[in-house]
Image (cartoon, rainbow, N blue to C red; front, side, top):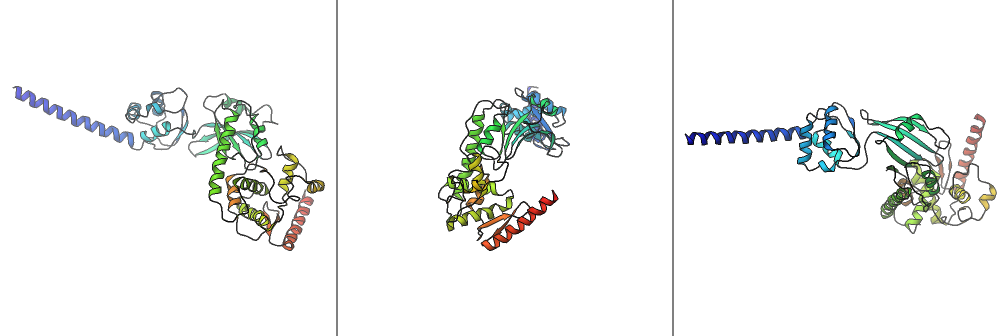
Length: 385
């Protein structure tokens, strides 16, 4: 009798172990295989939330088949305590494992509503936008000039106080350090005062910020980013450049940045200035003269006077030899790369061609022809206006 009982118990134990093993294999498969989500969603994880609340939200949105299994998988992978607050794009058919990785790895939020403070060369604006998970594209909700449009649009005031709203500061290539600081002073999500940093030391880019961040910490992020870019581009510079230091590279890049808005032209524009430096020719570039007049504090808003072109200032490259003493703006990586790897040309002149770009020339005679054509285009444009 006892032998039969022992045999039956052993059989039951074997079956139980077998079933448990099968359940574990099934659970692992459910956790790692594609999920039921029919289209992308934006998952909001508020500050102070936990994996239990997130799992309930995922079940309600049809992203996971079992909240319990999702939580157990997160526990088993030791990621429950790594949950990050934010707005996260969960792709169609994401597995539980993939969703766990998305909400625990950190970094910038990938979807939701954000307010973008754009600092441009000629103006600043605020954009309110929201990512459409289905298309992966941002939908603009409002855009306005904070200096001119009062009161602010309702779409801005609605999201401004929400806990899940994200904020971003976007610097255009070619802005001056004074412009950056001046605009940051009006961004009300930032705190504290900050001094104007050296010209050229800030990397034009998009920076996510949180309410309460200091202006000084943001400026420091921009400076560190520019330092890294400058070091990388300097290390990969062409041979035999008439540039002796990274600081001179930054100066030349800032001139290239201000001389053309056509990305494809930067290497050609850079080649003109590099060739002039090699030949001992003066750079004769208007943006440096303008910087000497404005000190980078805003836009000149008028033409350069003949007296200003003749004035002996450190930034008048019609008068001085070589480079001006400092950058005249904050150049982006593309202009730095162009300055340090210019196109191989014999160009020493360029002038506007009426299309937004420039006509380049190797000789003064060719340049004079290009200038004459540009004067004709200017006259035609004046008649049309």
